[in-house]
Image (cartoon, rainbow, N blue to C red; front, side, top):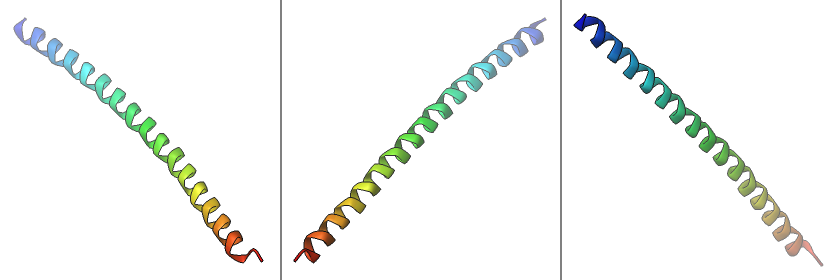
Length: 60
């Protein structure tokens, strides 16, 4: 009976760890999406800045 109780407790802790790990992975996924969005915004701003600089230099 003690072995059954011990295995039940360890199975419960494994379930809790699995849930915590899944939550951590979801948070990392949202951070990856945030990095992707911010990276896209920064890239667009760099392109816009270079275009504005080229237009400013080539303007007669």
